[in-house]
Image 1 (cartoon, rainbow, N blue to C red):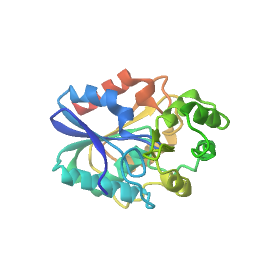
Image 2 (cartoon, rainbow, N blue to C red):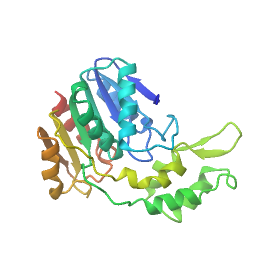
Image 3 (cartoon, rainbow, N blue to C red):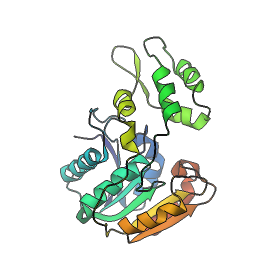
Length: 254
């Protein structure tokens, strides 16, 4: 699948993968900062998200294959790969399949283990928004608010609304497939071998996505891994603490 991506700067390739319900432009500010450090930054819309194509197949092997195609199409080598949340799982899958293409791997607040479905309230809110009946973002926000309390989560989701050519609003992500296949996003990374690529796992101090009990499996699969914890940050570490996140990443890269 040919993925949509945005490109910033010139230099060593640095690819960034967003998380569930995200899109490439969530990373614009950090991407520009990274590009100013002599990096050629690619922020990618994964399948069923942003401006990339929709597909009924939605799992980590497919998303890894999409990334391999993007890298081949652009003739990239010696890449730095960063993935947040779902994007972190895609990045881990890719690193295990194509370690020869990577210089370094960075995983933001995600472990290789299984995560049970935990987006039910978000999915219920999204499914309750009927774009045949509503015509404004404010109406969509009001409906989401019946299911989602967190203001930041609602604003993050609302960024995905766009106007179709027929004058009707819609979600950029493929809500039907995401809802049907949500179990796939939590699946553990399946592998019978380890990955020798130098790897940085960054976790938020307030997040429960990467626990002390996850460190053993992380080091089994990624023996050359390092763990950094960003103080006072939750799961959205790059958005909540962008300066600290930027420094940790650059210290690892350089």
